[in-house]
Length: 84
Image: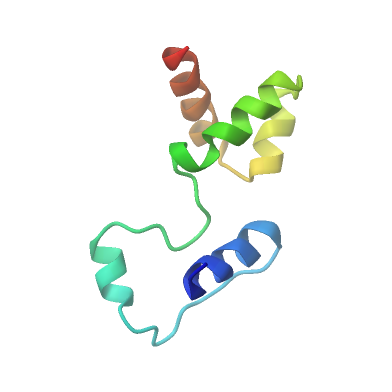
């Protein structure tokens, strides 16, 4: 796991904010469209959302556990439904 991945994992699991000051290559990562903060990509959350659906979690509980904005969460659920 790379250094930035470790920080992202800490950020995802905790209630803290991170600011990267003077990080070498930050501009390059941003230019490539890399997500530096909380991950909301479909491929990242798809397995977890499918698992939570199978366990019968409510939409509210899934949204809270993932920390996603409700609109992003609903978009991901719609993508899963289209694939099935």
